Length: 175
Length: 459
Image (tube, rainbow over all chains, first blue to last red; front, top):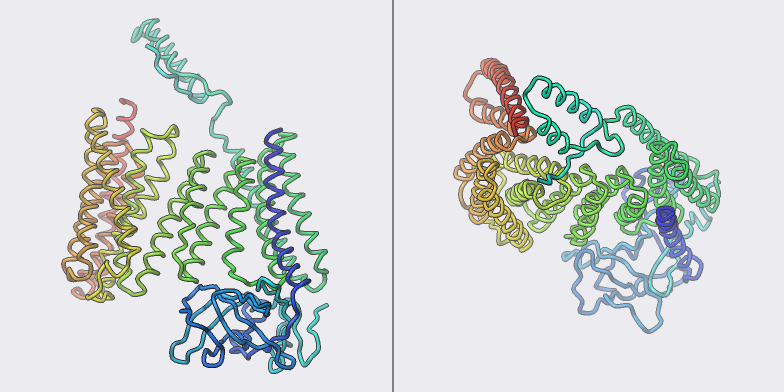
């Protein structure tokens, strides 16, 4: 009987892990601020590794000449917060910092991949760089990459989730 | 004299009974002696005879689980568009629960199909991993993908313990190592948190008495320390330091295996230490004997370039020397094993000292000195390990030692004669050398091992 109790607990723990994964992302998608991000073209050979689209955003490469960065020194794997502001349809990066801004502005958290000293750009990943598609169906997205927009939810802690993709303003759907 | 009773399988116990009766009737021993002999043994409670049929069933059932698990993963991957999001989530979660529940019921409630039940529990653990992957897909999560492997590995540990499942524990150990390879290799971090996690898995492999899980965990620790060294150097000279560090780590694990026997209540747990330690040690040292490898070093580099290496090498060497010392003290107290223990202590202490000198000098010692030292050291180690295996009656040591002896000869043959001899002569000479070597080894290995078996009976 004792074994049954522990076994049930162990299985419940696994199910809980799955629900926490879903819940955390679901919360961000449901209650976060929805923003539009402009994507950048990716080297076509890199596009489809398996069955997902690799996305790169304007905010993936921060030009520190125009984006305020403070006096922080950025190393690989550092966690950073990028403050965003709305400019027309899209949201763009305004500043980057290692601390979350407390003035109520919208900030997305990311991880530093590397800092390019030569061009003074900071390369950041946010965890919203893959969009999974049905097998072999990524080609239509690849062909229309010039006007590919992403709808992303950002919650108040800076967590982000990728909700929808748009080609020429039309949502990408697979059914 | 209250000797502890040894538990033996029923078949052996019966054989001994017949033999003792035979000796008694032949007048070799008297009634008292016969009684004394038999009272030293005890029939093991639930017939632990090698159950080959059971093992076959377990293997088939485990393979079935693996295939079914892979099938489910492919099913979800290829029917992506047909199924709605929440239906897929409900399906994967209910299949996880169904696999665990059925497995548990068969193995522990009805108790009639323990092996199939355990295989279904393993299937549950595989489905849990595919659940992590599926949910990441549904929500387009790609944030730091090694975390998925970590959650998989950690999530199945409680099930392994609760169900006493060795395959799941082994799986967890392998996944944990896979996680650290990605984490360190792709993201260039030292990933120190791997150490306590791996220690937990190692401790649990003692609890579940799994030599395989212990062996993989020890190997994982060596892989961790090797990648961490490579990352900390950021250059080719790291190769020298990586292998110096893995060599001393292997030696430490090997020595700990010897100490296991006296410390642990589970003497059988010494096997993974002996085998993994020796393989890692010999392989590291063997790779350092190649002249090609030595060409890549920058000669102005030194161990001081990496704080991680200095600290790790210092700590591991200190433990290795300490283990060598303990084996030496054991040799003084244990008269029966004295020779074997002394040889092994000499091996551990000598190799540790030479490796420290090599690490301190680094590439600055010059190519010839480095190569000469590693070659002599490897040869010395092989000979001592074989002697120690013979004295300590460990066939594995002799076999591994001989394998590396042959590998060493082949490698040196290539090194020295490739440029000197005509290619046809080179291959013919090599072939003859191998055949002759094989003949000698075959004869002597058999002789040594059969002599050893006689000694085991004498002891």
